Figure 1 (cartoon, rainbow, N blue to C red):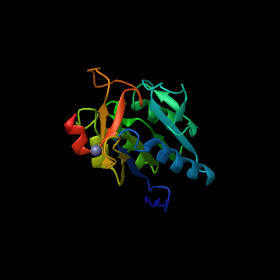
Figure 2: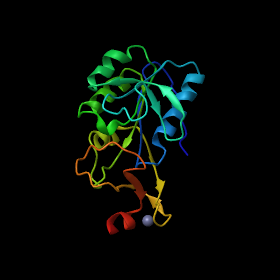
Figure 3: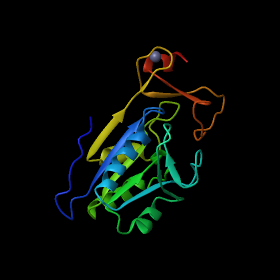
Figure 4: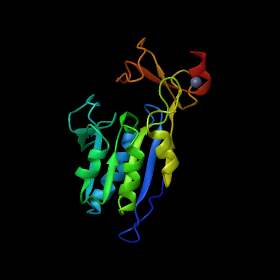
Amino acid sequence: MFIEPFKTGVDSGWIEVICGSMFSGKTEELIRRLKRAQIANQRIEIFKPAIDTRYHETDVVSHDESRIRSTPVTASQNILLLAEDAEVIGIDEAQFFDAELPNVAETLASKGVRVIVAGLDMDFQGQPFGPVPALLAKADYITKLHAICVVCGNIANYSYRTSADEGRLVLGEKDKYEPRCRKCYHRG
Ligand code: ZN
């Protein structure tokens, strides 16, 4: 269970990363934290890569249909321009951002912003995904969530691609991926 740190002053920003495989509940956890900040009247902004339009143009929507309004951005640097006076910034689908995202998060945190980033830590080949590994290195707090293996019921860390598509960036949900444990992932 993640215990939220609390702000002790204007300059105390930090980076939280929520990572894990597909279907592990990363976006739900991001939304949960953001909604609680919202209830406390903190100014929040949410960003996602413009590439991810699976559900809705401007909402971050999780698999369980909870949603929160977000701004799609094409480059991570744009977050600095758009974030202006937000106290808490949420970033979803971090794996699809460019390599500048960890520096952007660091810049925001050093300005006193609480930065909450959610993203896949591994791609469908089990390799570290985009800027997420560097974000994990720079993070103050890390939450690794797990799904349940659809084959055997163990804890699942891997996003197994069930479709024949070859590219790294194949957007999809239950039609194209399923969560699997280490053993079932490698069994193929
Ligand atoms: Zn399994």
